[in-house]
Structure formats: structure tokens, C-alpha cells
Length: 495
Ligand code: NAD
Image (tube, rainbow, N blue to C red; front, side, top):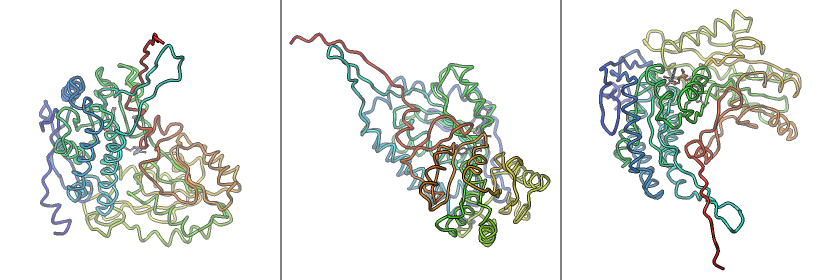
């Protein structure tokens, strides 16, 4: 069956999942879940508020206190986490189609990237959890100091809409594997796969109450979670604007641990001695247009050394037609729909700002596929961008590339670091000294050298500066969801 036919027959359940049970919001309120593919309403989603969040947190707390999950041996949790991952793969086609309909990304990627990465993440943390040892401190022989890791308790998770399953998995996988209970609030723009994940977790054997999902809007369902006195940790991915509020809410309430993965405006620096110009061009263009540019780590500021800029741009422009937006349900499509009309209009506003501030529009710049009823923007490239222009400073979160130039390493490091963000960066050069020197000078959580999209669950992901606090992925993520406890034992040696 073709994806478009299959999708028209799909039925979605937008009710919350609290304590193992699907249910409407206590208020009975719902909101429309609208597909950006063509504007159709997919379903009604529970509009959760304080009272539903209270119920979900109470369920999570009860599950934590009676040890139904954290009391299981790590090897048992491992088996269930792996079964959870297998459930995602078993339902991969359904999850991929749901993700595509809900947020507009090409089904080719929601299947090959989103479902697979989310499943791999759940499996990886499951497999890790029975291989981590605690410590004994090197103290004097009169005492024994055990340093153990314990789950923090109830973890609130708030995620954005750009990679709904992956962003959720990066947090729920280490949090659950470590033995915590979770209350997840997905984005109101893409709530459907999160609700399915919680059902699949139950089917895999995660006990009721351990993983709850409360869909709804930020101020109505997100804030009550971040402000909740019985939530021990809030793990947030989203904008820097809301991330700052999350830290305030943690401080205003119970000083819960607050971890934030926020925005980016990543610089991609190409020196004239780049070892492979074609590869650099493909990475620059492919990475900014991947996921319609709705990636926190998209290399949205491209710095090309002045002497090769013309040649670089000629090659880049030749690639642009290959990224023309098309129906995301078509398996051949590489650029899909922007998540909703609000985001599309925001991207188009930035494009107008770029023009009015004097940048030169080289490609795109318009809404696309208007007759579809969906939300599409042409892949857009601006040349002649200056660091002080709005399109070089603010995160656009759409398929818009700003091209700037530079004269030498010192000049480009100064320009690249002149940002409130510090999520990722890249440097392309065949000179090992320049690569190391520039990589060290760049203020970013990840620096790529001669590539852009290498990624793996084994490496930490997160930002410097206002790109956030803490790291997702890798074993480091366990630090966010565990407390470190010291237990001193006195030893009165008989010998
Ligand atoms: P957003 O900040 O608007 O929303 C993120 C989540 O926060 C949503 O679930 C939303 O409902 C919720 N929220 C909004 N207001 C809230 C409030 N007052 N209290 C509590 N929760 C609230 O961000 P978005 O538009 O969904 O996502 C795009 C942003 O996410 C971009 O800035 C992007 O860079 C960032 N992002 C960062 C990473 C990373 O790992 N650093 C990854 C993906 C996305």
C-alpha cells in the first residue's frame, strides 16, 4: 500500500497516558492535531493541565516509592528496555508514518533515522545499565566509603517537535534505565509518537506509572511539571527562551535538577585548503536542509574563506534543486513540510529580514507547494551576510543558509564565537595545526573536522553558553538522572 493511502486509513489516539491507562484530560479539553503535510486534522489531543500533571506525578511517585521498577535488578531492567526498543522496530512503519504526518519530515528519514535512532538509544542505555559499577573511595583502613549512584526519583521531561521520538528517547532511555519514573510532556505540535512510545513501553513490560505522557501546551502542562514540588529533575529540550524559564521554575519551586538542551546557530568554517571541496559543499548544503533546517545543530552560519567563496557557492547552488520540497509521504522526498503555519511564517519573516538588512538572496526565499494546504518553504541561501545581521545571530529553525566570509583563522574564530549559542561547529582544512587550533578556540559542545554529520549514541551532545546545561547521550547522561551517595562504614578491625 502506498504511504499516502496507508496514512489516510490511520487512526490516532490523542488521550494522555497516566498510570498505565489512556484517558482524557480531567477538564475534558482537547486541541486539534493538524498535519503540516496537507493541513488535515489527524485527531483531537488531550489538553492536559495542572490537574493531569498532578495525577501523572502522583502515579510516577507511587511507582518510584514502591520500587516496582527501580527495585528490579539492572539485568532485568536491561531486558525490558531492550524489549521496549524491539517494540519500536516492530511498529517502525506505523511510527514513521505517524511522525511524518504529525511534523512533516520525509518518511524516508522518519523510518531510517528517527525510529532507528530512538530504538537504538533505548537499547544502548538498557545494555549499559548492568555494566556500570559503583566505587569505593581510597580512604584510610578505619573506614569504608561507598560511592553509589541512585536514581533521582521522578523525572519530568519536556521535548520539542523537531525530532519528537529521538529527543524523548535521549532523555527517557537513561532516566528509565537508571530506575527513575518519568512524566513526559511532548510538544503540542507533535504529540502522537510520544503517546505510542508509552503504550509500547507498557507492552514491553515497563510497569504502569513508571512512564506517563501528558500532552498539552507549554504554559498549561509544561510549567506545572517544571514547577512541581514532587518532581526531582526536569530535563528540557527546546528554545533558549523557554529554557531560561525552566531554570527559574526549578529555583522557584523545589530546586529540582534542571537540564536544558537549547538552541544553536552553528558555524561551519571552510578554509581554502579544505581537503575535499565537493564533500564540504555537500555537507554544508545537506546539513542545513536536512529535517527542513529544523535541527538545533544545523550549520546555519557558513564561513567560507574569501579566496574560494565563488567556487564554493557555484557548487552549492547546483545542489539546491535537489532539495525542492515535496510530499513527505513520498519515499523519494528529501525535504518535507515545516512543522506548522506559525513556524513557516516565522521562517518567511526571517527571510524578509535578511533581504531588508542587505543580504543577497541567491536561492529560494518563498513559500512552496501552496496548493497542498501544507507548510513548505523553498531551500534558501543568502550570501553577503554580516555577523551583526539578524539572520546571522538568531536561530531561524528553517531551511535558510547564511553565507559569510573571512580572511584568516583569527578573524573567523572571532566571528564564529560572536554568538550567544555554542552548540556545534565545524572546521574544514588539511592543515592539522589549524584544525586543532581552531577546534580548540571554538566555544562549542561539539566541533567537527572535515565532516559535519558524524553522530553516535556513545558521544555526549549539548552546548556551551546559552545552548544549554548538561549533556544528552553517552554514559555522561546517567549523571543527570542519578544522585551520587556516599555511605561511610566504620571498620573496627579485630586484627
Ligand atoms: P519551545 O521552547 O517553544 O518548546 C519546547 C517545549 O517546551 C515544548 O514541549 C513546549 O510545549 C514547552 N514549553 C513551552 N513553553 C513552556 C513553558 N512556559 N513552560 C514549560 N514548557 C514550555 O521549542 P520548540 O519550538 O518546540 O523547539 C525548537 C527549539 O528546540 C529550538 O530552539 C532548537 O534549537 C531546540 N532544540 C535543541 C536541541 C538540543 O539538543 N540542544 C535539540 C532539538 C531542539
